[in-house]
Picture (tube, rainbow, N blue to C red):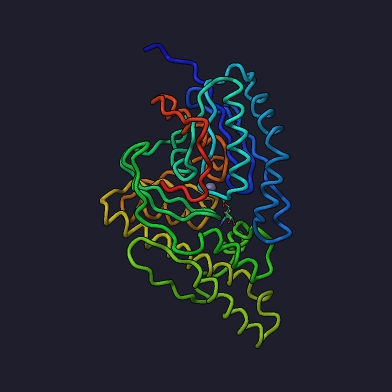
Length: 340
Ligand code: KG4
Ligand code: ZN
């Protein structure tokens, strides 16, 4: 079959980033992300403010994505959008926009599961980045998600472990709040962790069966620890900030790696692909590298702009579904709790 010229517009609006991207035969032509600064002042995403900001951003972001890709709307083959999971008000903005545009252009509409997209981002055509072979394990770690997924094929995947409370990024952000750091605190804790002693303080790891995670107990342990220490020394945080950050990071990475070790044992799969904002973390990157040497793992980390919430990952899933003519109907609805 002659190679088709497939242009997919992807739209992502599940949380606090409005993003649009154009993919041509699996290659990214543009990936525009408008992040919403407004939430920083609140130390977390405020759903109502997020959906309002999406409404303001969506038209200019889509416009820019088309312009950067140097194509017109008429050249699009299909529109892919995030159906869920995510914040309902946010999802509705992208869903309604995608539906109207597909209807107006009379081209197929493709629904995308945001969690599958984090995983399939590894299949964006990109020089110097290797793609994981099937089957592989995907660990998605971000402010909203923490999952380990057994990926047998593009659309045959099973969640084998996930958080029962907070996501790992939330553990970073909430710890940062206790320490008086800005939001999101992950990058700052990571930076300071590299200057501190990871064994200065000990935080007990949660005991969760199987491959599931729990991070809410860690946050409470850190809160009590800081309250106790600052009572004795009001300057405790300032004097020990790097060591505190290093110890928190050491604990969190330990939890992630323990579960990955268990998952590789349980499945016999040693190819591990990670995604989500926390995959930028220097500690997890180093631990994965160590795993390559110690346990014979092969690890895959996509380009950073495809690990955080972005529309290129939505468009690549759109492309893969387009090849299978797997389209959605106009009456499809956003789904806040959509499962893999
Ligand atoms: O994927 P992402 O941009 O958005 C979603 O949450 O879906 O991830 C953001 C999360 C935040 O919790 C942020 O603190 C965390 O990723 N993060 C990090 C680092 N960079 C971002 N956490 C630890 N170390 C980092 N270097
Ligand atoms: Zn995400």
